[in-house]
Image (tube, rainbow, N blue to C red; front, side):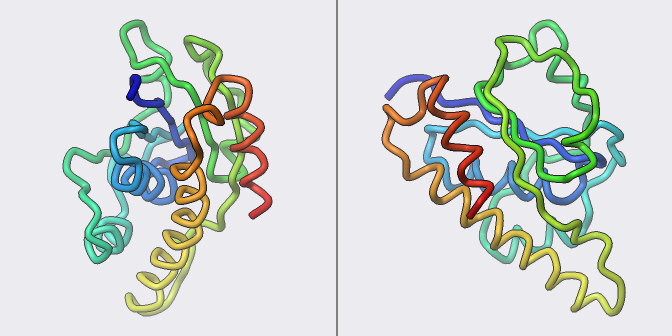
Length: 163
């Protein structure tokens, strides 16, 4: 097995969707993928409902934190192979120049942190979003190695947006 594929998930606040995706891909990726997450305007904390939903699913959240996407454009940062925006506002923002010219895709999800009401309803929104993210990630991690080269990964990741 070669080096793992580095994947960066982006959303505005890096507190919900991008964190769910990061943790899930690290969990599902079986060493073939190394996931990260960041935000254009990080909130500074991970939403507790995201952490609870991940914990219920048996997904490790050790070391997860809300951070700026600038972290991954700095010298010495891990070079990304694929960058996926998971919220519409981050997809429309002017991104930093990423080292290595990674493939890009957009997988839009509704913001579970926008859900109001009792805690049970709010947690359910995070569980539902996690399920949607998991479906796409399960397809991504099941791809054979030859489908993960630089040109094909972008095409594949973008086609998963339609699922």
